[in-house]
Image (tube, rainbow, N blue to C red; front, top):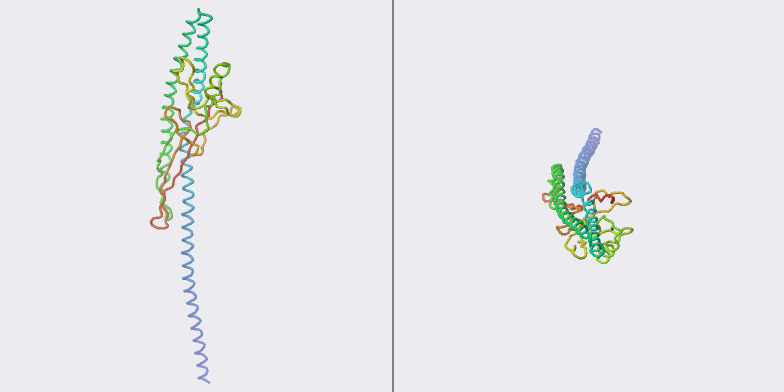
Length: 306
C-alpha cells in the first residue's frame, strides 16, 4: 500500500512538473511572439511617421514656393504702376494720332494755325518718347524689386526647415529658379479708346485690339505703331488682368503651366519659383530623396480706368 502511494505521488509530481514546463514554454513563446509583434508595430509606426512626414514636408515646400512667388508678384504692379503706365501709353498714342490729324487739317484749311498745330504735334511726340523711356525704366525697377522680395521671403523661410528625427531628416530648401514673365491668354487691361474713328479703323486693320467677351483690349507685347511719320514711335502695352466690374484682381497663385517668358523689353506681370529639398527617412541608409515644388503667381491687376 505504501508502494502504491509512492507511485501515485510520483505520478502526480511528474504531471505537475510537466505542467510547469508547459507554462514556462508558453510564457517563452508568448514573449517571443510579443517581441515580434512589437517589432512589427514599431516598424509600421516608423513607416507611417516617415510617410506622413514626407507628405507634410512636401505640402509645406509647395506652400513656401507659393509664398515666395506671391511676394515677388505683389511687387510687380505695386501701386498700380504697370496699369497706370498702360493707360498713359494709350492716351499718349491717341494724342499723337490726333495731333497729326489736326496738323494735316490746319495745313490744308487753316494755314495760319499750322505753326501751332506743328508745335502741339512736336510736344506730343516728345512726350511719347519720354514715356517709352520711363516704361523701360519701370520694367527694370519692377524686376529688381520683385527679385529682392522673393529672395527676402526665401531667406525668411529656409532656416525653419532643418530637422533631424529618428524617422526623418530634412535639410534646407534650395531656391534653384526665379523667373519673371507673364501668364498665357492675358492681354493688357486697357480698353480701346474711342472718339477717333480713323484710329479705331487703323487698330482693327493692324490687329492691335483683342476682342474679349464684352471688352476690346489692346494686345499685350505688340508694338502698336501709328501710320505715317509717327511710325518711328513705340507704343507697347503690358499684360495685366483687367478689373472686373470695377473690382481689382488680387495677386494670386496660378498654374505654373500657364507661365510663359517673353522678350526682355516687356514689363513682367508674373513670377515663377522652383524649390528643391533634400529629405532622408529612417528606413534604410540610402532612403534619400529630393523634393521639388514649382509655383507661379500673377501680379495684382489693374485699377479701373479713369
